[in-house]
Image (cartoon, rainbow, N blue to C red; front, side):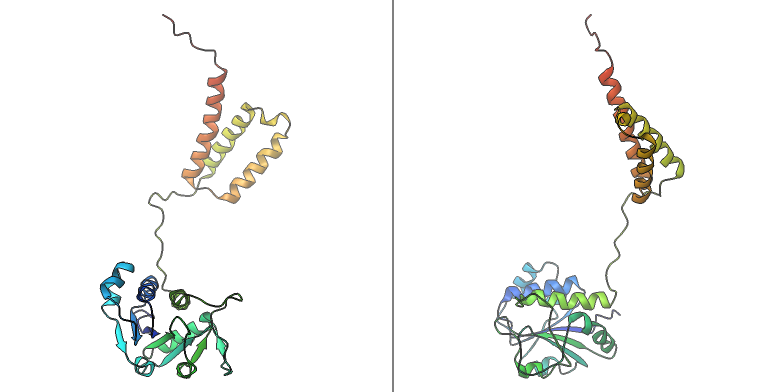
Length: 251
């Protein structure tokens, strides 16, 4: 069971079906599956799926409620998100700060993050239901799209739950370059630089020492160092071809 399985996203009176779809997409990205809607605008579930591809599992489980109280009735922790200044002096927290206590509470039952309608957000009465009142740090322009705010909140929960997928290594992952491979590269690089008269105005020893230092810091793998050596060899071959007398192809 994932730590995110008990996380619910609650949208209070969402006004735009496209925003509902964008929230569903964000949930899919962050592996959160429960969406609860409080008096939403009329929407077509099939259109939500067309906007948010491959989300049928989430759309099929959307639950509808007439009140916020009903939507979070079973939740042991609920966080309300707001961007507006309020006269009430709630202690505000950030999505990152609330993520850990929320996931800890999720071990005991459902938890919710809830958001207000697009035009004016959550009412004070709705925020009274929140265990934590959350604001997303922004510039002096605090207005975020609904789905953006949900994505930020879910991202912090996702990271706190350590639920990110592990990226597979490259298909043709190469081993580290060996000392022998490195030395062959340095030898041929030296020869190719000499071929183009690079040391005419430069100290050869210092240049090669810098090249070694740079190469060691870059830590190329075996395939990469062989490619670099091939470049050096091709430089020498190109110079040799250019210097060779033209062939007489007359018969």
